[in-house]
Image 1: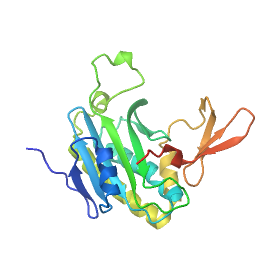
Image 2: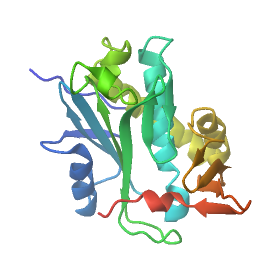
Image 3: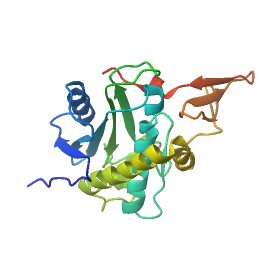
Image 4: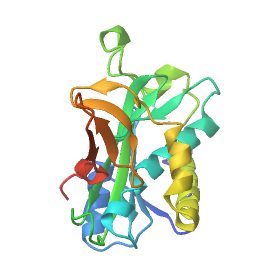
Amino acid sequence: MTETPTFPPLMWGEAAQGDAFDHAVMRAATGCDAGLISHQLGATEMQAALVFAPEVHLGRAMAMLPLCGVGLQNALGALAPPEVAVHLNWDGGIRVNGAACGQFRVAASQGDPAVLPDWLVVGFSLPLVPPNEDMGTTPNETALYAEGCADVTPLALLEAWARHTLNWITRWEDRGNRVLHAEWRGLVHGIGEESEIGTFVGVDEDFGKLVRDGTGTTHLIPLTELLEAP
């Protein structure tokens, strides 16, 4: 018999038959209440997605993407062995012990940063076991159970993610982006590293990515660039 997750007040769950993120987007678009956590807890991968009803314009509400990432990092920090290191990519990627291990996604009812969206959905997928036994063929990718986390159950991680994310939502509502910035900056991967488009030098107040090109010019890539079509 499948256990039913227990969520904190203001949050409630639905098991998705297919992709948890797509399920949450569908429910949000049809008018469900904020706080819905859609989830799919499989044997090889877990997925979860949270529905928000923002009270600020989309540009500011996009902070829920890094906020949910911090919530997952905090949850894994509480459940995983202390030697397991969890970091976050600016674009929603999840890294465990330096290797890619899952991804966050985000969608909203509309894409104009200056407009209040009807809804916003942030979700993640996290591989639990590697797709094949020979991990040497994909050294930059990993899975949670391959990194010493076999005792972390999807159910426990889902519940912990909900609790830690709600805690960060409360802190963000009380204190704004500053406190979230301080936590997230210690977890983000790649600041100072070069890419094809330039050097990642940091983020602006709304977590937009600042990239300095070869001429010394700094360009801003807003988080809204990561939005998926609803």
